[in-house]
Image 1: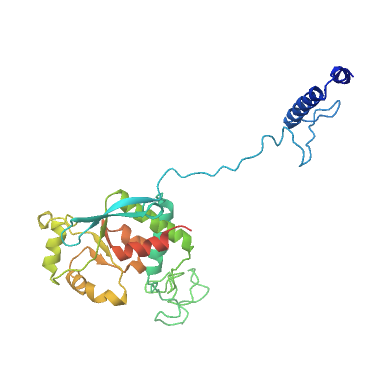
Image 2: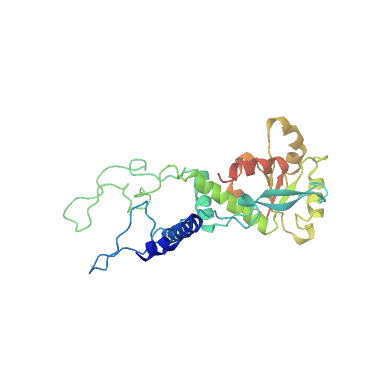
Amino acid sequence: MNQFRQLAKLTTPLARQTQLLAQARSLATVGAQPPSVLRPIGGKRRIAPSAGEVSALNWPPVQSVAAVDPFPQTVQAWMMDFETNDPLDIVDVQRSVFAAPIRTDIVHRVVTYERNMKRQGTHNSRTRSEVRGSTRKVQPQKGLGRARHGTRRAPQFVGGATAHGPVPRSHETEIQRKVWLMALRSVLSAKYSQDQLVFVDNMEIESHRTQDLTRMLQINGWSPLASTGRHPSIMMLPLMDPENMHVLDNLELASRNIPGVSIMNASDAEVYEILRHDYLIMDRKALGLLEGILKPM
């Protein structure tokens, strides 16, 4: 009633219009503020408002905030020359492949899986039907006071069979492919963090002589000197595609008689073989292949 009396005192239309606009702005401001949560009279339980209403439960509105990774997606590494070990270039490699978290438990599972696959399983022991000997009863069943025996082929006699012995079987186990990929990323990351991973442009050498390759590995610092009496521990991981197989002929011939030096195709890389060598040498093509396979989706 007081508001209508004040409006009645205003004589000019412009003054009335100005007053009405001010009241409309004040009502809009009050309506935009979140109302208090409704409580029933005499109770403590809150009543949630409907989805379209503005209340203290859904005010202020939820804003979508995307998490930003503070680390770059790539890490840097030197690209070396295979024969002289001179730096040629700096390459960017995927952080998710060569700087991933090192999961020793996953590596242990995969190493056990790969070693079980390599077991021949040809162990065998002869059973009672395979042991040579008579089937005649050794002694009478009763009267002598001795134990009851039926044949000399029994396990308790010398030259007898084996009870519950090993038989030829397969030791293969199963493992998920994602677990195997995680273990391979962990091994590559461990080699990268320990400066035991070397990237080279290519692995082409001019000579096929073993002594030339041995001298080259010692000069590059990848193999111990002959005076120490220790063998090298190097795994070479080139990409052996059919088109460039002739390029690796000299390397394969020269490394054949060096103990501790192994060559494996990058497409057949194994976690155990990489882990048991000190140095891992990888060419540019193998780097691209492993990044395409091991990069998480």
